[in-house]
Image (cartoon, rainbow, N blue to C red; front, side, top):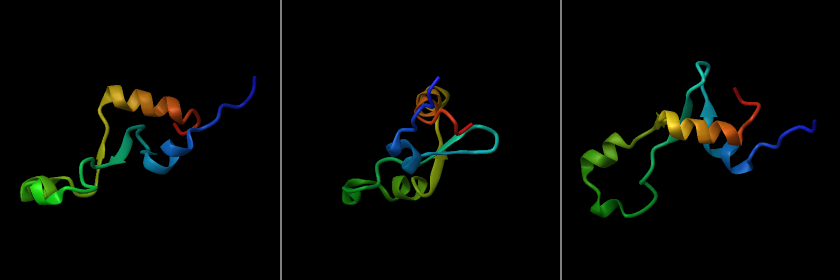
Length: 66
């Protein structure tokens, strides 16, 4: 059976932790900051772990990163 390819967009955007969770950047911080509250901007700093259904989708994009 041939090797499976990793989606190149996924390998740039996501990382799998040692426990198998998927880490991603917080969404909603590219533009339009003027209309966002200071609380939202502060809480959307850094990275976050994805929910279980989203995690399953992302892991299918990266078959060997487990």
